[in-house]
Image 1 (cartoon, one colour):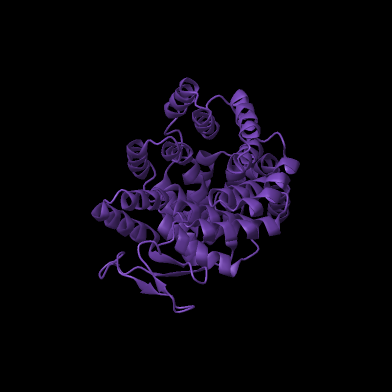
Image 2: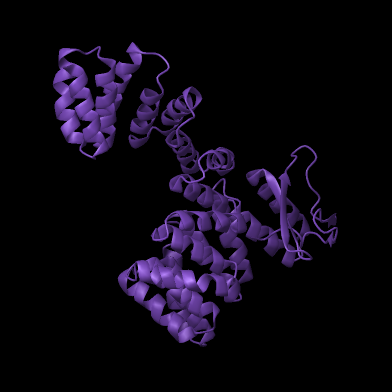
Length: 386
């Protein structure tokens, strides 16, 4: 009888009916509080029903009855995570991963926690392994792309978003992120069809308008860009990307008063999330405010610890300003955060990545030889900016 109830509850969970599973399992557990299968299933139901406290209580009870149970550890980790107990959740999920790494969700949960903790380099290592084992798992590949993006490796992130898009052509996050990365690399012609696709998938999504505005801006269609960004601001008055671009467009139109108006509004929103820094920092060079740019980048490095992206921009800007020692130190941080050095050969247009040796370091002012074509790569120009 109990087996039938548990099977029925599992079916309810598969169909997204956690409350039905809870209603069926609670009497069973009350009658037999040592029925491990019932406890585990009930814990899973509580997690799905977003009742983490109840899930922890039940799953800890199950844990006392059975040792080394992957599902118990996994769902206990998820429940603890929902309660904000990130470190304890990480311990549980690491144990689940140690016990059984044959399922993609264990890899995904572990990488998500590391990503949440800004430990992008370690997350990257797990995600590289996971995506090799499960190349068709959309969520794993998407998180891999996001992690590469945080590490400032835009070309690699672009390739991963392309894979996600191929796996699910109508997934808005894939279309928008892929198009956005192409745009920030100034790959306008490649981006254009995906910007168009985003506006077909969901024309009312603010990301579609941001992308269209950015495409028009890069193409020099300033009136069309202004229309897109203004539409976003009308819907979301605190959107820092749109506000920043409107400031630049006003500057280009020699309207300093409007430029300052939008810039101040954008600056007021700074720090709401890590991406707000990218939305604003890149505006300052376009406004001729290079010292402000440095200041913004430095603040960004402190806001998004573990991210290499702001350090790359900072290193490049320091080099432009002739602050070579500052640039050297910034690049060293990039290598440490990524765990590898990325070099671009302009002669054959290939990229190479090799592990960073923290003991020996890496001299960014010593020229290198391309392993593909044998050309001399002048440094630090050969260090890939994206």
